[in-house]
Image 1: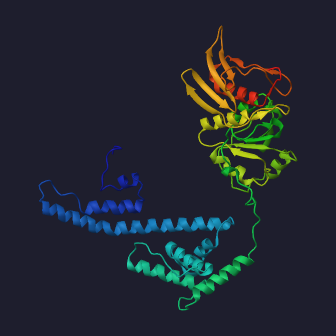
Image 2 (image 1 turned 135 degrees about the vertical axis):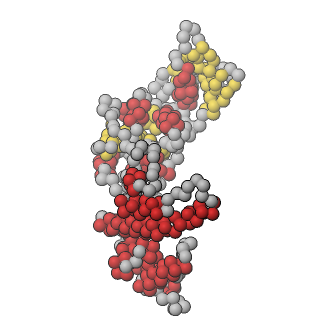
Image 3 (image 1 turned 90 degrees about the horizontal axis):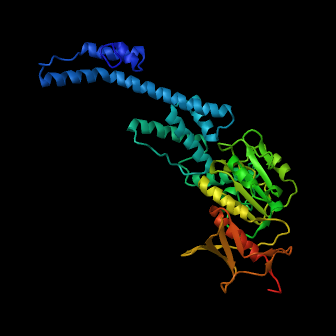
Length: 423
């Protein structure tokens, strides 16, 4: 017999397709008893032979259906029993097991029994929801629900039964011990923080905190001048929360979600943050890792600006760059606010306050020229930083792909500068 050959009257063919030996023998016996008719047989004889095979197959199919249902119920009960052994079963799960052990119910009857008991305990009305089963099955499940409802303290003959049970349920809830809140309601979770923007004012590097879980973002952070003074904490798959430095910025990416509030590294994060005061916090993690940070949100300090990256990896990198642009040295004065970008016939422009950054074009021998102008259209001459360094309105950059970033830095530098009296 080749692999493509299937002989219905041979038990080996049925066994090769996954049937047990007993079922294979029964199926093969049907075709042995009722073989195919010769080609010259009439249509009526063929229909009669088909009816004979259907009648012979009916008890086999019914036995297979009963066996499949028995295995499914055993699997369901085993799953609930495993939860009870691990201490993770709810009251509803426990009543499902009691319905099987105390009353010998099957799976659906045990579930209806647990539904009735839970409705009585919670103060809910007596209501059993039926599916599309036949009348006998619906009656059996209704009886199981009624028994669970009665054993849970319900009485369908009492007019004030629902009100009485509701009061008892409220009393039990008030007297039950309350689990401590891991995160106060007044403290927003990091998953609800907005995405970074250029509207908040700039913050000194040493008062900024970044939490990252992607190794690719760590190098992007420390490539920014001055970022070494910032506190950068990584989420490592092996060591939990770790403090990152420019020379040792290697972490193992975290791929999945951990249970909220069940992270043992919360104390470790508290020790890393210590008594440091922050004005700006960024959570740069993927959506699948937000559960880790949400679980330790109570450790993070409340500060002026709290943001997180969102959406795709490409957009997250852009948002991180935008957040890094708001960093400054402790003794620098830079302008804050939203930069209004525009496209004109001569190139890209950006406006912040009274200043306009305009792309002039390429310059010789190499580079691209940016000019900072005042409202009259003339170059912004005579402006100096807080340290007295004179700012030049003409800025030459070598890489045009950095045009927007260089223009933003120049605009903020001029908005934080002072105009000299001589000018």
